[in-house]
Structures are given as structure tokens and as C-alpha cells.
Image (cartoon, rainbow, N blue to C red; front, side, top):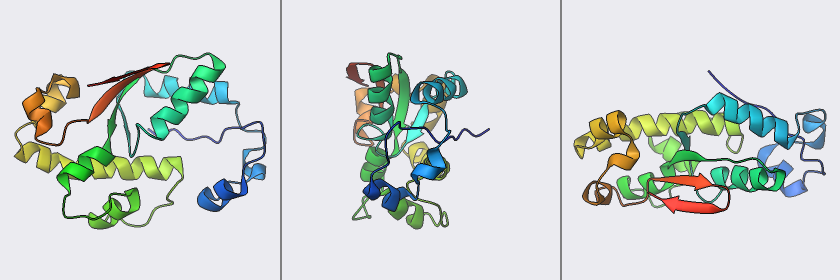
Length: 173
């Protein structure tokens, strides 16, 4: 299943953001409020782990900050494909989402649009699975979760892979 919605930011979208994403004020007019969108997103996620690229610095952090501001707790485990790619795809000079998508020949996508970025992140993660299997940790990750890895096992792929984010607290795992 998929989840995507625009959100009414309750202020004009800066020109730089419109240029980057293609999202205009007209497109978000009448969209759900931040509270309604985050509540719906949390219902969609359930107990799943979020997969995002540069999650710690952008996607998850952005949602966490908005959640804090409107009084909603946002506590989800996530997998950040950026540090995974940086440590597993050492032949690449850059590890931006579109660069990795090109590396895996994942095709064109509407970069900087959440739904497209999410699909590409899932495809990137699927492409990283064989390397995790080669390292001997895929089965453990899939059966016991990312937090079950020992320091030695996480060291095989460069350390930080997941985090638990709570409003106001960061706990790297």
C-alpha cells in the first residue's frame, strides 16, 4: 500500500522549494493540516520501520520537529539508506539518492517528491540486501531487527544504520 498527501504549510511555499520539488501553493491549497497529515501517516506506518535517505538529517527529523511543535509524539525506528550506501557502495564518489538510483539502474523518478523518493529508497534497500547477506547479517536483521546486531556486525557496514527518534531525544542504535 502507499501513502502520499500534500500538507497545508499554513504559509507560502518559498520559491526555492517550489523550484526543487515542483510543489506550488495552489497544489497544497485545501490539503490536510500538519496535524491531520502526521496523524494519518502514523496510522499508515503502524509498527513498521521507516526507510529513508538522509533520514537522520532530513525526512525523519523534519517530521519529528513538526510533530514536537504541534504536540504529537513521533517515535519510530528508521533505516537510513545514506550511511548504508556510504559504507557499502564505496566505489561511488557521491551518495545522493539519484546517484544511487542510477548506480542500480532504477530508472527515472520525480526526485524530491516524497512518494517517489520512498519507492526508490525501498528499491535501493532491496539492492543492498545481497550485500548484507554476503556480510552474513541479513537473516538476523530480517528476523530479529536492526537493533539485534552486535557492535562487530554493525561495524561491518559502518556503524549507524538505525535510530530511535523520540520527540526531544535521539538514541543511536
